[in-house]
Image (cartoon, helix red, strand yellow):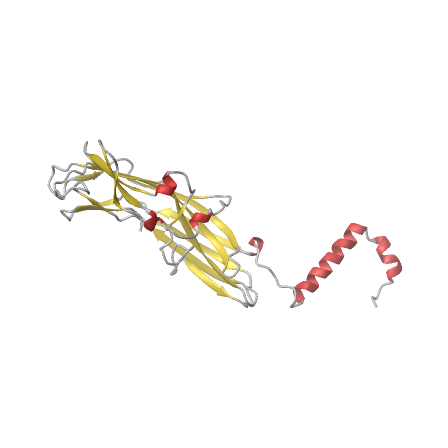
Length: 288
């Protein structure tokens, strides 16, 4: 029996407060009992020190090959510290970065002959909102080294962890028209404009429940003018802005579209087209 007389204490307590006390007592009992499993929720996860930046250096152009021009953009880098609550028995949670491409223009112009272009057909035609930019192995994650941390329950106390990722472009573009047998340099311009969303996510490995912790949007642009008549080593120059716009860490969370989570990734889905000034377009490199 309780130490105070039950017949009149509830007259002193308003009914709403009585219900609240009852609720608090029952939830406290729940936390102590084993039958009621604590759930991992967004409000129990602490995200601190989120950073996202693009290195403040210009894109580097490499002209050491008579076959291809290569360029290397600065790196996009993201990192975050996360404190995860204790993980219940029989649960495994992964915290990490997921990235998807939302828009891509990548044109290589060969004077007035035509242009080659790397394209993501489903994205270009608006059939999907985003395409996974996973490494092709670790779906849905961007990678599986520094990009993710796995927590296997039961863990008795909160876990502090750090996850980080980086990304840049380092492609090759042929000096000559890609469908011709000629090796004559004809390349006159390279333009690239690509947008990404990068999410910091906690995911239950079994149920696949996902909690989006942070959303970052970023964009990489490249604009290179080429004079194919100049000797190798002095043909190409960077035009337009030398530095990239810095990423935006959003103060709201964007949902992750389904195509951002599985196959194909952008590298496997992309197609190299040849689009001549006159005549029909040709597929040079089909999707994998």
